[in-house]
Length: 141
Image 1: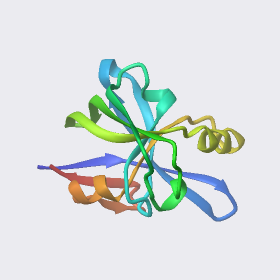
Image 2: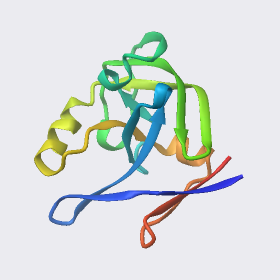
Image 3: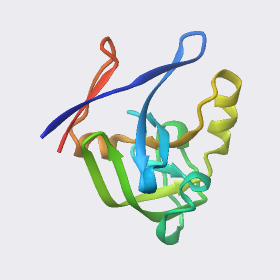
């Protein structure tokens, strides 16, 4: 099944943009996720997901590309539920990182808080197609 969802293009400074999508977590909690096509793995902010994650374990080292390149302090956790429109994903295992450095950057340019980054693992699994002109993303599930 194919779903088409809105994205937001955030201008951080001259000719520097991030693409963002809103997700809904357990109990209706909403969070903003950066769509990071250059990141190999999807990650979530430890502080944001801490109230509802399960099965947390330390991870030795995770080499990744993109915004989180070579961040070594990570945990692996299970997010009970995450939704993108009609797409509902249960028990999503993901890396959990301290994304306070990204949220500090965002405070300079916008009032958005970042809950995580959707990496290529997620985008490939759900065959994502980003239409920048229409400000939409399509996911296949």
